[in-house]
Image 1 (tube, helix red, strand yellow):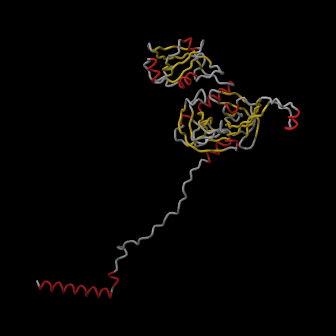
Image 2 (cartoon, one colour):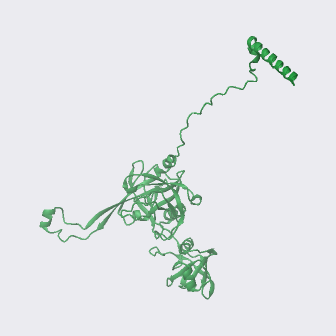
Image 3 (tube, rainbow, N blue to C red):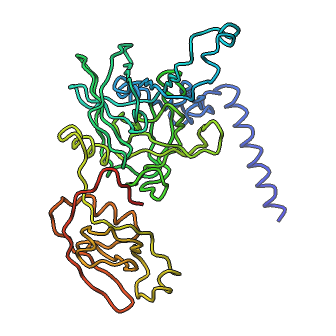
Length: 385
């Protein structure tokens, strides 16, 4: 054991001596080779700071705004004549001529140029019963306008202006609109001038709002105020998808509460084309009134169906009476298309042409029936609800 220890000690001493000599005389032999050396660590160069991406819809606004117009209307309204208007003493102290009994009422709204021939689409209530209409374009041109025709049942109207080089809006597709899509509302709120607001599509196919007879509104949270009526609702590419018509409001002044309604471009375009072609809109009519069928009504009437439209009254001498429809019947389907509510009945009948035959599937307590009815022309003054 002692001999092994001596061998180890001598060996270690010799190795240390050799290491000392080499490190003194040839230190380069102990330096690591450059090939084997690890590459020096360099600080990574940071990328230049990036500006945050800016989402802008200015291109869509620039594309649509020139075709959106401001509409100014005026109307002479009779007012009760002041009994003191002809009294010379009254006129001496208060001045002025005798009260003419007429007051000038002014209104405002918006519209959309839909043709280079000068046709402007707007709301019926914007131009209803007015005496004068003036249209102001985005390029500051102003011109009188005349009414080509109106459709109170959808609250749409078509105006005509005579100007050259008119900007025309591009039509979008109502079938491609989805809940959550970004939309812009363009119009003249409160008469402050052309304004663009941003929002999304909140809902589609809104009915039973009591705004018009035929309802299938686009609901949006894009801010719409008085004066926006008749203006454009456009998609993120600037194409027309609706005509702004109404807002939900509990404010005495009618300010928006974040819920607005627009007529889909599919309905607006169909009405517009009929008005331009014929001067009015022709719709099918069978002469019935009704309401949605509820579970309670179904049980009371003892019918086997749970969805449809209850016929509440039948116009005497109308197409439905001639076909055998009676109050209390439940309309289940029209031409094999199921009926879910009363709005569906109105929409399905309205697209039928006068003179055509339609098949009505009826549910009654005694059983069912299928009746053939000849579609009539909807009387313009009458409004079915």
